[in-house]
Amino acid sequence: MRILVLEGTPREMGQLHGALLAGDIRLFTTEFLHRSRKVFGVPYEVIRHHADLVDATCSSSLLEECAGIADAADADYLDVLALNTFPDTDALFHHRVLNCVNFAAVSSGGEAPTIFHARNCDFPHEDRHWQRGLLVVRKPGGHRQATIALGFAGQAGLITGVNAAGLAASEATSYAPRYAAAGMPLMFALREALECSTTLASAREFLTAQSYMGAFNVLFSSAHEHAAMAFELSAPGIGLVPMRQLALCISGVCQDRRRARGQLVPCADTVRHLRTQALIDALPTEFTPLDLESILRDDWDLWQQRRGNSYRCICNGHTVHSMIAALAHDELWVSLGPPPAPRQPYHRLSLSTLLDLPPGLHTHPACS
Image (tube, rainbow, N blue to C red; front, side):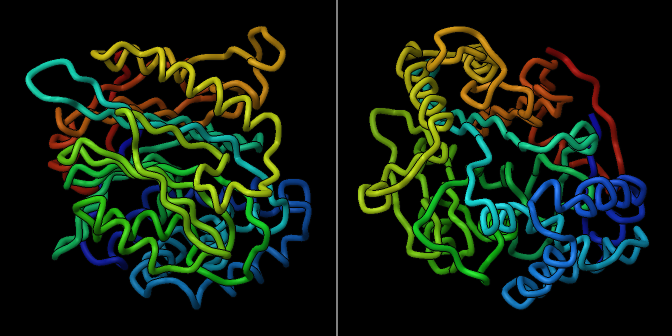
């Protein structure tokens, strides 16, 4: 597993990122963005135009980091920006769910309760780049929290990650009655929220102050508060879902009553959500990461009543990375694929050890 450690100003972090992973970044833009008609159903020029519109809504530090990545990798700046906004682009043009599973659950074993944050990330595209995932450690300094993200080369934002204050975050694309042409890109919003937040309340304050283009259900959990909260973000408004009965599961299905009313959700997402919720409900009061791995590896198709590899399954052929975080114990379990990632060995990692690594590109052996 590759671990990219970045430290310094946004420009410095971007330049180191681009210099160390230039080949990967150029490959991704060629194989993913330049085939946008197949991936998104629209010409590449539309993707670039959309990324250019997003530019004005982003924080200057993230845009500076993207510029540093582009310069050092000898890549086009709008290509790099498009790599960090494609979930929003996909939502804008396809209005579809990207099939991710996320849940938080509290184990009552040991001296104190422990909250676990578990996540499978799915991308419905077959690019080789998804088989070259990496862990990105960012140490921005100042009053901002250091973060650890599961992602890919060229990614300045975040879709799955944790911070040094004990918060974990992940997302699932959802549906909304309408979409906006401008707003905070999801991956930038999650990274900003993790860098500027130490509690669920401060994450809520940041996320609810933004406007969004698409519709995304976001899960935040706090190791120190032993609690979690879901934020259902969309252009029409924001719904909040607190954790009840020591567990909270999110997917593309909205649970806030105002947002769920009239929501059209594909069968695949509904079935996967029901299966995940049933497995969480069946957990014993005291459980281990191995119990959560078994949920993330589950390939039972509740609709067909048999094992499968479709989007209806928690684990499927498009699951590109998987994470279990137990931040109260300073531990992460990570699998970066190749897909399906939960079927590959998990890496057991120490959060504090990762944050102590010097800037550069490192490797870590798998240990299942």
